[in-house]
Length: 296
Image (cartoon, rainbow, N blue to C red; front, side):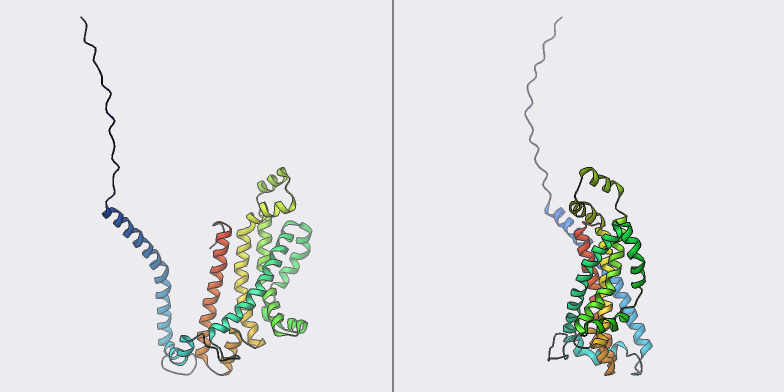
């Protein structure tokens, strides 16, 4: 018995239509992303804001309505409202708003810190890579870094005989030590595999510096730079109190002599916020250059 041979016809291709996302789903995902971002911002802003309000409340209750001693936040606002609301005025001489005093101090910090950053990185590489340089220089650096910033001021005035270079020297000598130490630690902690690869490839000293040493030590370098920029800001404010002229340190000392404690408190808020901005700026720069390896 023979069975009929079945015949098969090729199936027609079935076109699969793309699934279109409805506008409602897109809108929902967009709202979820906005909500997530808003939650992150709120988590970053609300805790410090709430803490600040609590501190101001405790301060207001502790100070009360008395004008003796530390003024309350209400007194600070009443006495220094114009200074708070108008930081950009310039009547010539030292009669300037806080913005211009802070800007003058920032210029000095920028110059002094730039010199200390270049010299600190170079010295850190030297003592980190050379055993004899480490043995000879490290004990001296460990002694000098413990000298307070203001202790250098008489030496700098005797050497330079002018206020501006003396302030720059104080900034330099104060901020260079953490840069040297952290850079040297980074150089000594370069993985052995990196060094062996450099030997196999027979890299020149210049190639080794830019392709191996610098990328490997960048997180350490920027850690030192962050500490150094903070110490620079501390040093310039302290120096300007004694050197005089325009600057936030001089402003604070001048207001103290005039018994305007409220203005000093406003100036301290500017000093703190500026120092925070400098720290975050250096941290962001390190994060970008090290491609996320430096601490932020």
